[in-house]
Picture 1 (cartoon, one colour):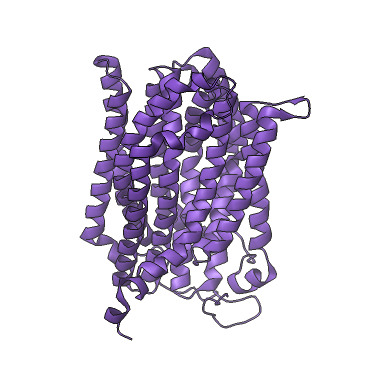
Picture 2: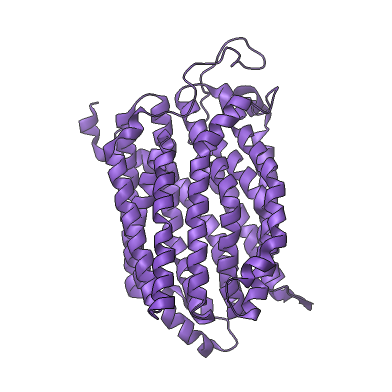
Length: 481
C-alpha cells in the first residue's frame, strides 16, 4: 500500500509509530514526575521552609551530576544507531562505556557533599531554609552515581525501542519512593519522621534499588549472547572516547542549563521564602507538562538515531514532526488547565495542613505563576523535541553552543530586574518565559536547516572482531516480541 494511502497516522514515521514508542516513555517520565511531585507534596504539608529548600537544593544536585548524567544518557543515541545499522554486538559494549563513566564519576560527585555549606551560605536565604537545603542536598548526592549508571543501562532499552521495560521500572521506583516518603517524612506508629531528610533518603534508596533491577535485567543470558552485555573486555577505549566526544556537549548543555536555572532560583529566593516556595510549587506542577513532553522527545531522538543508522534521514525528519505534533497537542491541553484551573491542581498540596488558611497566600501566588507556565510550555515542546531530534543524529555541538550563549540570559535579566530596578516575581517569570520561547525558535530553525541529516556518531567501518561469543559470523539485531 502506498504511503499516501496510509496517511499521517499509519505511515512509517507517522503519528501511530511515534505514539507507540513514546507512550511507555510518557508513562515512564510521568512516574519520575510522580516521584518528585510526591516529595514536594509531602514536604509542603510538613513545612513551607522544607518546600522552599527542596527545589534549589535539588536543582544544585542535578547541576553537579548533570554532566556525567548527560553523557550516560547519550548512550541512547549509540544504541539506536547500532540497532538501525544491525550491529547488535556493539550495543552491550556501548552501554558499558556509560556504566564505567558513572563509576569513574562517583568520587567527584561525592566530594561535593563537603562544599554544600559554603555554597548555600552564598545564596542569602534565611538560616532556617539554608540549613534544610544543606541537609537535603548532602543526602541526595549519595544517589547521584546510581542515577548516572541507571541512565546508561536504561538506554539499552530505549535505544532499541523497547520502552515498556523502562516504563515498568520507573513506575516501580515512583511507588517505592512514595511509600518511603510517607513513612520517613512524617513517621509511623510513634516513631518521629525525619522531615526533609526522610524525603531525600527515600529518593536515594529508590535510585539504588532501581539500579540493581537494571543490572539484573541487562545481564540476562539472552542479552549476554545477542547483545554482548557481558563482553570479554568491558572498556573499549575508542568507543569510550567517541561517547565522550558526542555526549560531553549534551552533558555540558545539561550542566549549564540546570546551573543557570539553579542561579535563577537562588536569585528568586532573595525575594523571600514565600516567593521561592511558590516558584517551587509552580515548577512542580509544570512537571505534568514537561516530563511527558520529554518522553516524546526521547522517542524522537531514538527514531532519528535508528533512521540515521538505516541511512533514511527523510524518515527521521517525518518522525520528528510527528513527535512535535503529539507534544504540542498534549502541552496545549495541559496549558489550558494551567491557565484556567490552576487552583484545582493545588488542592492536594494544602488538603492536610493543620492550618489550611496558611496555605492561601502560597496558593494564590502559585496560581498566578501557572499562567506563565501555560504560555511557555507550548514553546518548551518545540525546545525539547527539536533539540533531542538533532542530538539523535549527533548535532550536539550546536546545542552546546546555543546553551552557552542563552543560559546566562534569565540569570542576568532576573538579577538586574530584582537588584537594580526592584522588580518582583512577575518579572522573573516573564524573563523565564521569553528565554524558553527563544530556545524553541532556535532549535526549530536548526532542525529545518538540515545539517543533522549528514551526521552519524557510530564508526562507519564494521570492526573485524564484532562477533558473537559462540559464532564467527556477524549477526543482525535480534527481534524481540
